[in-house]
Length: 281
Image (cartoon, rainbow, N blue to C red; front, side, top):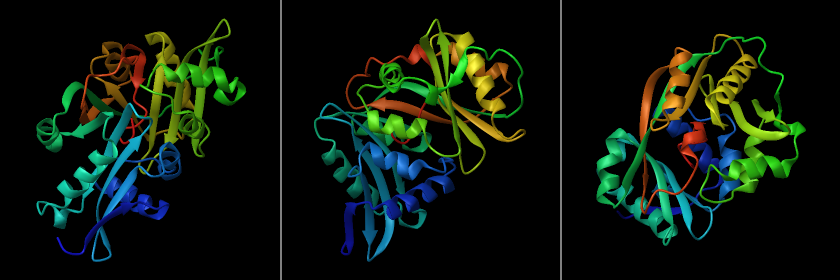
């Protein structure tokens, strides 16, 4: 492997990785580069062969206890030659000591098991079409109108560790909508819709019950261009989330396995109707 080097990505490198992810059918968001970089600017690695980027991996280290692995891609013509294993080892070293989460695509899941990762649950990507809904919106307001600390506190229950800078960027990104559901002044749900390479993703969609999730979902897709593809990444072990997708005539088109190197963390999957990101959790 003479001539193969691994280094931390620049933002330009991350743009390339996002383009690779798009070609793999993962449909990243238009603002994912700037948002992901806020999570951990040193947690993105690129493998370069004789000056050509050929492999990448994200290993976002949120703190000393938890990290998330994603963007594990080798250009097709270089697969099976050991370059992926090299960048995998470097990434795992960066996350040494952490409980590591990942969303494994079907063809990689056996490899992750051999590296000690254990299945927590499947996530199913559902696809639907945006349309307009009227009414049912008197308790839904823009997140930007709320106290920032209350919003961040609500989101903390859905992730193993705090990621304040990332959450703030995610909620306020361009080409997106972010709404909260209020009950007596308390936040009982938050949803974000963002523009992607193809259509839109509702990500995340968190709610204290199925009715709140339904109303937030309908408000979000009502704000988007009508007749466009819309995607929702649903934890299969939340039956109410699966039912929400089915009620809106959404169909499954992609799946991942949420796996962890240690035990699954205590997060609110029963209130998770849409996952934030397959790439960084």
